[in-house]
Image (cartoon, rainbow, N blue to C red):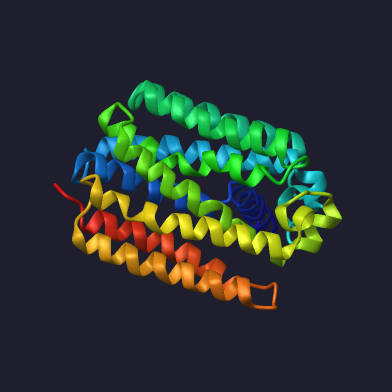
Length: 292
């Protein structure tokens, strides 16, 4: 009995790992932020529940399908070879249907409990991640990071549309912040694991263009993010506290990126971890200082 319980718990853990819970959590936080800003306060609890459930299921399902299609290259990379699919702990066919079921449940939840616009945006995000990023671009072009970033930039817009039933300019500001944040956040990691990506034949930017080019492009994106991060104040989403918080957070992000660019060391994991803290604090400040 004990052995069976351990085996079942191991299987459950593997399926949970396939859904990339950390990414799902970030998706849910940014989705909730979009809902909160659209409502200018906390939305109806049931709408929050169904929107987060539908969006979370889609994020999880897309992550599972991404790993299903990437299982061959994941097996070649030190960073990913212990994942459930390349390690053989989850059969590929099981993962494929698991991902499809999660996506189908997501679409049903959003169709019956939220609205068609949110359903369309969630479908679009999943399509960009699974089809455009994973299948069409990842193995062919370093542009996969930037074009595929559409998927990760949509969650706050999904939350916004769930409340308002439309996508207006404030929603596009949220999208733009997330869109500009993602490439520099990833490129730092891509530099650290450049040999892994090279071994797997994945043409990330540092593999194709080199470390220095990638650092410069990281700086360009981070510099662009600074003025864009201030837009919520100018377009009535947040007040002066947010403005100065965004100025401080984005300014520090830019300075750390400059230091990273000038450094002879390719490893910039401190910058990577700051980028995660940055987006969490930026959205928190936006919610805290929201204009009602």
